[in-house]
Image 1 (cartoon, rainbow, N blue to C red):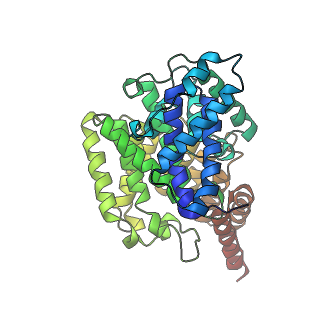
Image 2: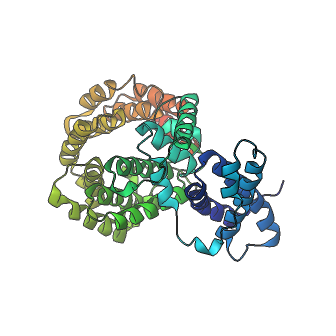
Image 3: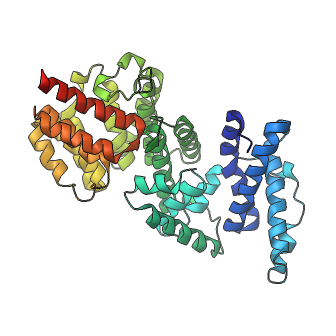
Length: 405
């Protein structure tokens, strides 16, 4: 089997949602369009590696996918004569000249879909995440997430108005923001694999959020999300060591943080404050901003961060937010208080390694080495991320070595 060259693979990832958007907009059949695009991508990965890139890669994919769709429709001509007439017509590629990726996000976040299904479908069909990655992000079994995505695709296929104006629908905008946030988060810290991060995902999330802000410049939450992404992504160079190992926030070389990006993020955050801190992404950006402004770990304003996490938790109750509040609580009121907060979300986070990791950290703060070792080892068993697993095991080994001295 021919191996896809890295530059070809990156280009195909970028073009896939754009081509899917063109076909769904034109023909209205999501399932058939998705299958046709996958066939076109497979053909491109083989042909382009041998023959080089065509002059118009996007147009090439659209034409091949259209032919695949026409073939599929012809096979059902007795039952779907009207669709055949539409699909086989020759549509000039040069007539398609814009990036449809953001349109695809609005399509998948359709008002006819329940929010959970809309977000899951968008992450899978457009965001490029696997079903397993999406399930991990939402703390549900992979089978449950697969069923949710299948139901959303079926319901969307039955809609008679798939491309309603999503930019002026607050519910759809909120769903798109959630999708972009999850994609960025998966890119910033991968839930599985040998790498700590997936730069392609985080960069694409930032690009699309910039595009969404250009469309909705007055939307404080859109601006807040972009600020959050920039402030968080600014730390990427310091988050891993020379061998790809994870470096926690308190141990990072802050001179390696991207200061121009931090400045841009803080400027964007400040621009949203006239309306008050009322949105979840604004609040998270404000927290990221406080971390970014601290030149040393001991300069971090944990008191204000705790206040912001408390506000965020009231606005959008979520066990992961509570777990973050547990860390802030420990920094302000001590590790015992932080552990009590972490214990309050033990049940919903039983499948996540992050609960055990935080518990290990708080037990270590309290000088309870044996408990910290146990929790770090538990977290290492639960995570599918190699860099996180290695970090947790090294942390546990260091504590055991300290006890042995």
